[in-house]
Image (cartoon, rainbow, N blue to C red):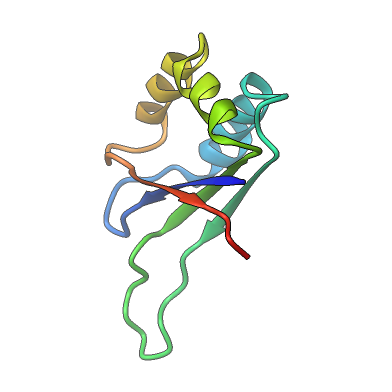
Length: 101
């Protein structure tokens, strides 16, 4: 399993309603059949009250590197990436990982 974490910093403009109601459904619809799972996590303050490192994190799970390559190189990738400007002015931080446990 391959997990792509897409993270948005705490100080960026971020329209959470648009992200949840429009962007994530777009991702799930366009990459249907390639994604195993897609979930969104909201960063919370640390126990000492410090800001979270990221306000929003999406975890996109793909069965293998082949499906990730299909998604990122496929016809819908440009549409999904272009939609980012509709909910934030930040450039997302992305991490590609292999699920080991």
